[in-house]
Length: 340
Ligand SMILES: C[S@@+](CC[C@H](N)C(=O)[O-])C[C@H]1O[C@@H](n2cnc3c(N)ncnc32)[C@H](O)[C@@H]1O
Image (cartoon, rainbow, N blue to C red; front, side, top):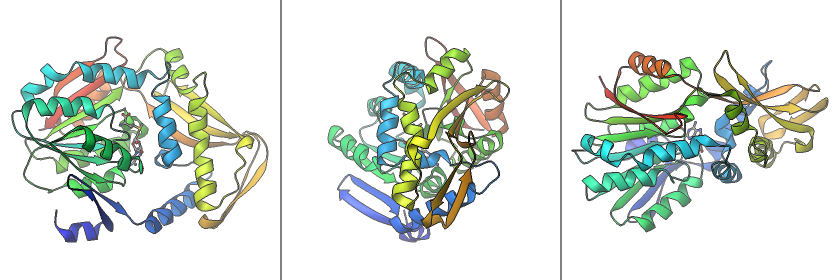
């Protein structure tokens, strides 16, 4: 990695220990981006907040809690696939790979992949890319548990992380995108994103993506409307974050979590519903807004895919599908691909 590229991306490098470095933009630049994006998305006729802003420290903790809920099947389903992947994945790992992970979070499922990679190579360099500061803790904990692991983290958006790893060196990358985070993107964004990944891949790189499948509506509904209301807390936490970081005055009691499955669009849509007519000011975004009773702020889409949709996404973005693995309930798919 040449120094000029880090500088170009505006990163500060943090060398934590011999086997752990991470790169992140300055706090001032991330606050400015946050304030500007909130200003623009809350001024639209249909107000929204990007799901990438869910993940402050508390949001990341709440997401980890969601993963322990019985209703939240995506975590268990994908884990089940990863637990039985060793024999199926090893034949593709004849070279020594780097592991690159988009949206690595607490890197819990990643451990299953790291274990497989260590069956075929002695040393491993892991590049977690995540917008959340949770990356610091998860990287430290991995370094404690794996002796021959070197971690180079990027605390930034997927796109910036991809810029960072492009042309890093000649070693092949196994690029992973787990948790069906891809489902947050709409069709055009998703196509562009896959094309971007495809363009930066070398011919011997592999791409492993986890995708949530279409299924019974009640199962879907319950996964995003859990009985412990953890998803509701996760959704509302974004307003708390805007209060804390941008000085806003959202009263969380005046909003409620709302998540519905839109069959035609094949996605769960998540909103915050305003329970009364109210005005909000967000000083650091230089913004005042009014919300009417029952007005919705859109916070996330979570698309669910059919197998044919997955196949056409891959084909259109120039990927050859090598494998598609499922859990026993066929709730979730893990797809291994390479560049055509
Ligand atoms: C749904 S969680 C999935 C976490 C983990 N991969 C898993 O499967 O359990 C999404 C993760 O991606 C990160 N994230 C969300 N949007 C992002 C973005 N635009 N750029 C980088 N990271 C993002 C979040 O901080 C979070 O850790």
